[in-house]
Image (cartoon, rainbow, N blue to C red; front, side, top):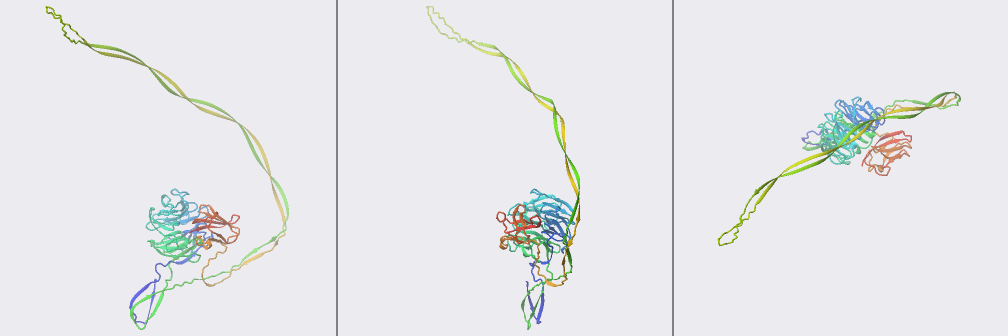
Length: 625
């Protein structure tokens, strides 16, 4: 609704205007068409998954359980297909480069395969593991403007980047709930015109944005059913204006955001009618802005676009007499759509005769034996061995030297003596006085000797050596072996006769024909279509996604199950969660495992098969909380 104000003078008794653009830009796109049914025939699907559009507007869809890729025009006309068991194993992600080559992520084989636009195999890369260039269940693929590929490696909780030839470049991500981390698995991936990479983090219910090299930028979204919230995000598509379309799997809707990640609008609800979804999965936007949604559990593709026939409203106002003033004209419009179609049936009669034959045979047998003789030989050999050994010796000597020195030392001293004679005279008068007066003195002399010897030493040292040699001998043997074998052969013959029997039959048949006639009538009614899904005897699993907190009585319902069939539910890694034996056409699962524990949110596989092992149906169950 838009309100316009005018300042005018009414000079006529009435005026009429037409209001266009009555709906704001938040109006969701309108349903255009859908195509596809369950099956393995041309144009049918068994859990279609991802979708990509080429420069000509043709659509390529991965048909997961049928292990193939199908190509359609943008109006849903079948073109071709390729793949099949042994060539593709659970194909999911798909992307197309500027040359028209198609890249497919194989969930089952942990591979990326490249094909030409017509489906001719070109190359492949990848293997199971967590190293660079390896995968553990690859899912989404997106291409940058330079041709590099970004692959969501689900169970390794990371994004890997490759060149267009498959050369590994880099990776980022880990398990967790923080920025740049992924919980359970990063599901799908998209690249904008600036080269930024967007990842749908299904377990954390967010969309995360990264630079082309994996640097975390921002994120938006949270768990819930409100505007801008998610319940297990799936695919991402970006149009030419930079608007984002997010497949909200658990809420069965598509949400639109602008380039600033601000919520704009949404459409869809649970069901199988036009514009409804049961597990919206893949998304693609073509050059005209039309949006294609892969409705996985309804096994179809739905197209949405601009709403043709913009509604108009006519407002008639009568004023008498003429007045001058300010008037506010409020324009409202109601748009009613009635879908009509004409059904024409051409009568066709199908006559199927059934014959019952009653016969009484009289048999005459002629047996001609043929003998086949099979000889069995048993050989017993007695072997006598004669060995001749010729040794070769290698001698390695070891030397040990012992030295015993003998010393002879002769010392001959030479003395040099210096004598110093020092005389000390002491005069001691001894007086004997005589009358003559004669004095006779007495002298004492003491000599001092100083002797300094000089030695000459002559030393003679004669050593005696003793050498001991210890040899090490290493023998090398050359052995010549001579065999003498005496075989004993025992022949055993087995005769197996083969009989050729020629019977002669005498049969008296009695035929009772039964005719089944199926007429088809020509009817040309005009009806108002109010689509209601018709499943016939097809096995249906719903609600899928399955939320134990919201499902009726908290159970998953499976209808049209053949009596006695076994329903197996497995984890994505192959462990059996539960086994249910169908005792009635309707079977319920309460979301618990063999030990009565509630299973965790995530993807599970179901297989419904007969007691003889015939598989009636297989698919995925998405458990959300």
